[in-house]
Image (cartoon, rainbow, N blue to C red; front, top):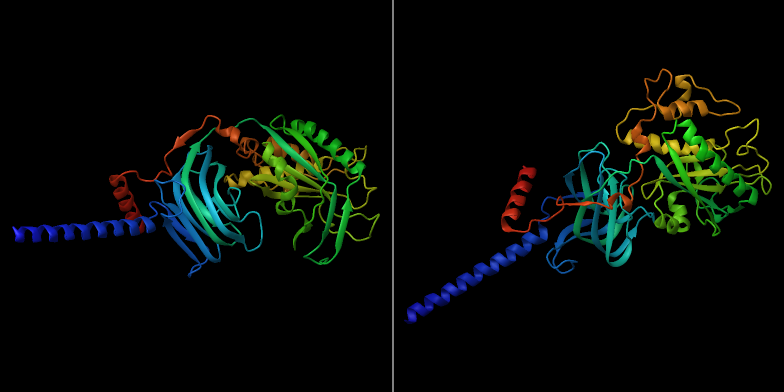
Length: 446
């Protein structure tokens, strides 16, 4: 009997050790197993660590995905998922952050959802925050798969700090094929800043928009509403809101090609509350960057419109008021029958970019002379825009805008009113699914 008792004790100890080994092994497995996700980093070394966290998590049934950038870096968990072309998708997750800081201080960097190797991303989160929901909407366009990532950094940004991601969800929505674009036009009344970059660094700038400037912009947007329908052959229409911003703009961006301009980063503190309230498809920011009645100096001379930028995946451009307040560049007259031209031109740059990003080989907006079109003293490039928008370019083998351009609007919550939940981001919920995930991962590695 004593011998049998000893065997039972030994057996119990043996099984206890086995259980401990299994539990420890499972803990290690869960900590470093990322299922079908890959790890991506901009810079290697010991700057970044990836783990699964069992202590800090949003859901009791799911370890969080933790990225810790000990130094400035760009890192993400990403997963390749199949998508249907020309379909709306919405991705959500919960994120918690601790001491997340951008190296350049740009609003486009932080904890975010993103598509790898693209500029497409959600609004980022910085600083220290408790669990917060992130939302990212995108149009698959011509793609059949995307690498969907949960990121600490940005396409051009580096961040340090820690982010935990959890409870991933993806939905499929519906594309809005309405060709009407809802436009926001922000007129910034005053710029009050000290320049920090460029050949005029250190200069104090205080420029104001006049009542006549505001009246001119309002008239030209009214003209734009009518001219877009006519020039596009009713392929496109717009509605618009004009918001006059009383608070001063306190930062201006600079680069060697465009000199001084208003970047989305500069405008964000002034316009974001408006963008969050409405579903806008395009943004104009109207500014004065020079006033010859006050000084012979001007911040920029070589453009009146500057586009091809994005604010939270919405096309964004600057409209610069003329330095000479007596200029007739935006005034309708017998000598200028198309004063709204710059508004149309910058909007077309976004449609042009959308076409090219979708792989459509169209003519460049600035290549009008290549196809035999010239600028008219009264109507500017109206005939070129007509051919470009109606896809009737002479000798261009119909290389103007396609129907895709007019439906390539940003995704909004209204696209997901009747959405369908997908399981592309679900974690395995039983042992068999976990084993299949491991086998799949091994296959990917070898």
